[in-house]
Image (cartoon, rainbow, N blue to C red):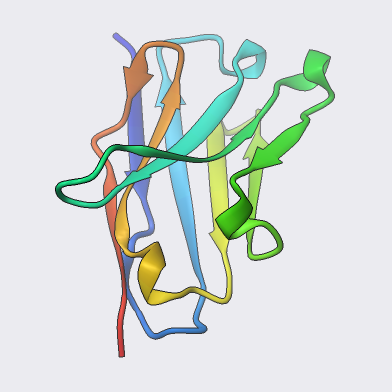
Length: 114
């Protein structure tokens, strides 16, 4: 059974930071590219960032709105992908999901508000 379990969301003030984690089980994690998406109620799910596996040189891509503020990384020994989010803005408020292939986690809420 494939499972993706996100954690690390919460309430943070504008300009603050959060680090999201996603622990993956049931697949060959070190052979899987991973991605983070986010979704605001009433809007389509939006791609945020992705990271390749070792044979892809762990290449990273980001949507323009988070470049320079967010960093995606992975620890293959822990089957975990991370999203470090700095300089958070109210428009970053969303439910954040990790995904690989056809599988998705349950999401973790990030709220940026003063």
